[in-house]
Length: 271
Image 1 (cartoon, rainbow, N blue to C red):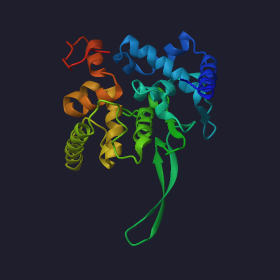
Image 2 (tube, helix red, strand yellow; image 1 turned 45 degrees about the vertical axis):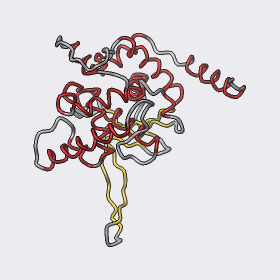
Image 3 (cartoon, helix red, strand yellow; image 1 turned 90 degrees about the vertical axis):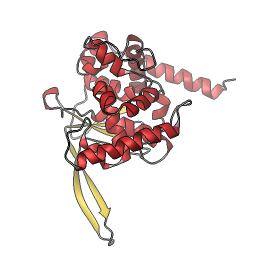
Image 4 (cartoon, one colour; image 1 turned 180 degrees about the horizontal axis):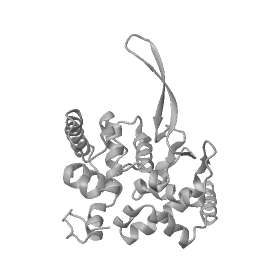
C-alpha cells in the first residue's frame, strides 16, 4: 500500500511535469539536431519525450561563462540525457539536480600525485564531466562546430549510470535478468582488443579516448551505440548485445530500417 508521503511525492512530481510545456515545433527543432533519434521506433520516441519532460521538471539547468540557455538547448540536452534511461527510468538519476552547460570546451584544474609523492597541478581541457553525487557538466557547440563522432551528453550520463553502484569502472547496475558474467566477459574482451588497436595506431570504430579506462570505454561505447549502432554491432557484436539489453533498444535495426537495409535478426523485435 502506498503511504501518504509517497502519494504526495508522486502528486508533486506530476504537477512539476505538467508545468513543462514543449510545443511540437520545439520538439521538431531539437530532434532535427539529433538525426540518430530516427533509429528509435515510435514507442521509444514517445517515451523519450515523456522522460525528457520529466527530466526538465526535475533538474536545474545553469549556463556557465555567460552562456544563455534557450529552450532549444535545454530540450536537446534533455532528449540525449534520457536516451540511456529509456528502459531504466529517471530514478537512475536521483540524488542530484544540476546540469551545467558551457559554451564550448572548458578547463578544469587538476591535481595528481606521482609515485614519489610530488603533487602536480595542471589545467585539463574537457568537453564534459560527471561528478559523483553532483552535477553533470557538458559543453554546447553550434552544429557546425560540434566535434565529429562525439556525443558528450550521452557519454556523461552513461557515467552517471556507471556511478549508481560505486566507482566508474564500466560495470553499471544491471537490470534484473542480465548476467554480470556475460557483461564482464564481453566488455573485458572488447576493451583489451580495443586498447591493442589504439596502442598500435589502428583505425578504430570507437573514439580512442575509450582506451583511458574501462569506465571511459563503456561511455564511448554507449555514444556509438546510439549514434552509429551498426558500426558498433559489426565491430563489437558482444558489446552491442549487452548494451541492447541494458538500454532496452535496438538502434542498429532502426539504422538499417532508415537506410533501407534488411533487418538483422537480433533475437528481438525492432523498437
